[in-house]
Image (cartoon, rainbow, N blue to C red):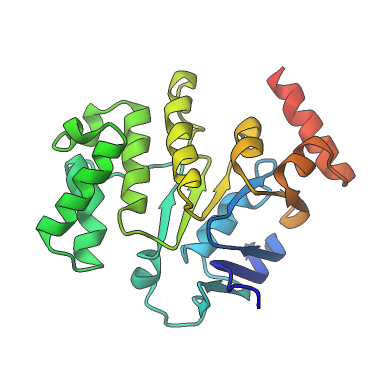
Length: 249
């Protein structure tokens, strides 16, 4: 019997102002898998992640998280989001809270952990990423790479079923990209289930189990990372990768 996917998307549709953005997305993500979403700007990657995290309401389709239908009306969205760690391009760290308070807020407010338990867990995670000394600093005292690592730690502090990452290196200076990707690489190797939208193709090839190419709100091609990125079958995938690599040259 096949294990229940950590995430299952069935026939996901979303439109804005009568313009389709997602048109029939199907995807299974199993525990410990890393799935990289690639595609041009406007292909639907960020919208898909926002739908998974219930920040956008579906027009049609269903989403299951570890076997639970989280797309039903009137579901407790805060409870669902406590099971999904997310880091978007805009980090949304609370500027008036210390690093440690940012990391522990959801554990205390949603999971109802004691301040002591949440703080001990938060400090342990910050120590793992080399930021324990910054625990009582405020976000504006950190570099962009440090802020991004804090956002990642905050996202995993509740031990979520799933981690969503949306182009998390896009706003970083090139010299800071590596330290953030190193942390994602570590999380992947530790068995974290990840769905990430990324333009870091070499990183996707190294870390992702599956690459999904979105084009015009549909899955144009998906499969093992090396196959999709090195020997794509679909012409649209070939054209995208050719343009993307050309833009980098």
